[in-house]
Length: 235
Image 1 (spheres, rainbow, N blue to C red):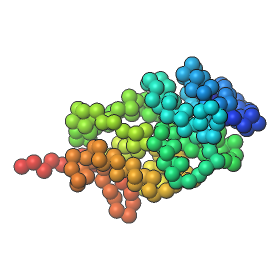
Image 2: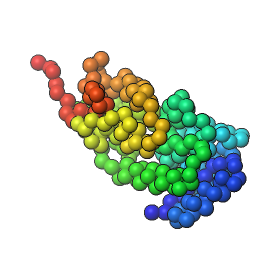
Image 3: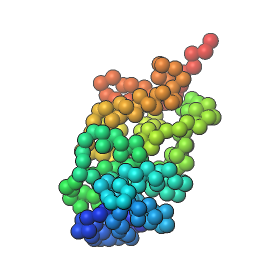
Image 4: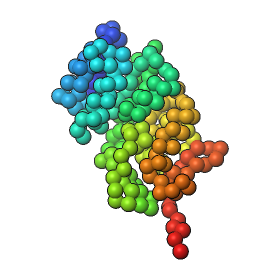
């Protein structure tokens, strides 16, 4: 299904190449060449997806992501695929925490970018139509991007929310760390165990009522799962 895509890339030749490949797929594509223009255009047009280069003049891609995620509901939820020449674990963690939906390291094949665009659009459209998941006193609403515990809202980072929503869609199912990255973010090349472990640790601090996990369970030798039911130990 065609989408409105905003491309923010300061390399003119690369930007034109991306535009041509996306338009072949039927997408309506707008190109800008600096971070300030990316913010203005995203606010003006509310694109279905943003392809965002990290290293850009005026405002870099990380700050563009940070600004848009802090905006109102319309712009804050735009799916973002980041393009970067840097591929360290810290860069990946920062991109996830700021709300990137996928992450592609340069140099890359434009056909791979088109495939990532297709995957992210499909995943976000499914989330938008999803149901509300409830386990015990924990409630996850993917379409509204909200989490509540005992009726109280819980503030999560974008990365934490994506991992929790992925687990909530299949309660009781054990996911490996790589599966969580692929299902929640679409990553299949830059998999670091610590990426998921850090976010799970932070999630537990926010949603678990005690030091012994009630909701987010470790499956030793595999990864993690969300409990499909909560057993009360009250007498």
